[in-house]
Structure formats: structure tokens, C-alpha cells
Figure 1: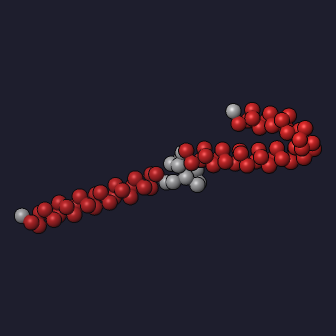
Figure 2: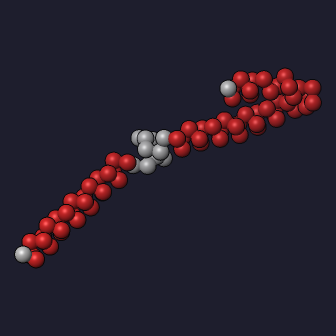
Figure 3: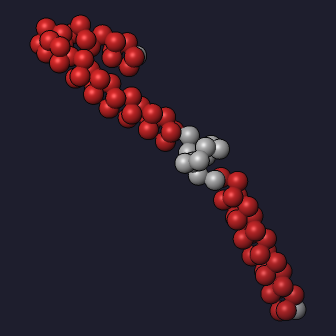
Amino acid sequence: FMLIYLLGMPWAFQSSYGWATVLVIGLVSFAMLGVEASAVACERPFSSNANHLPMDAFCKVVSKNIEQILSQATDDELDLE
């Protein structure tokens, strides 16, 4: 939808801006496509790209923490008996 909108903009603004339409459409397209790319990147935060969150590392840390808590809980229970 956005690409069709951006491709139709030159015909809508050509009578108003003349040759400056090329610059205006270029800037508007750059801004709108940049926002679109940012939105797509935010939709998938746990991917394998460089700027995404390392979900595997988070899961490993949580797993180790749970193991440590469970081992301490069983040690404490054994000391009470």
C-alpha cells in the first residue's frame, strides 16, 4: 500500500511544486520507508540479526538461575532435617 501511495505522489504534487517535486517526494519517501523499516525491525525483536535481542542467551541465563535456586532449595531442605 505504501509503495503505491509513494508512486502516486508525484502526480498529485507535480502541479504544486513543479521540479521541486522530485526533491520533496524523495525526502518524504526516505522518511516513510525509514519508519516502515524501523517498525518491521521492532515487530521481530528476537531474531538473529546484529541489532536484535539474544533470546538464546536470555534463556540460558534464566535456566542457570533456576538450577541454582533449585539446588539451594534442596540443600536448605536437607539441612533442616
